[in-house]
Length: 93
Image 1 (cartoon, rainbow, N blue to C red):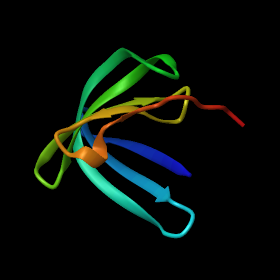
Image 2: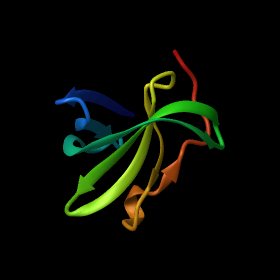
Image 3: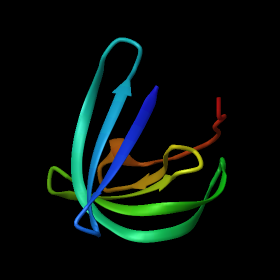
Image 4: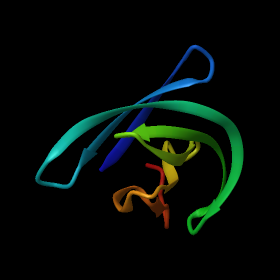
């Protein structure tokens, strides 16, 4: 299970606290970055109005899109292999 909380600081600055669990281990990651704005993005799970964030991960820029209607990241693009994905499906409970 993954979940994300977004807190805007100073208008365009962004702090992300990202909770994760793989069934055995869990933790929280905190990242800083900038908001680029709202963009329409299409991934296998559908088309969403998403917040485009440029995050700093250990000095590498990671571009991610957070869709409030899903409550999670729907896509990330990065030169770091572990930070590249697109949402394939979702369900709201």
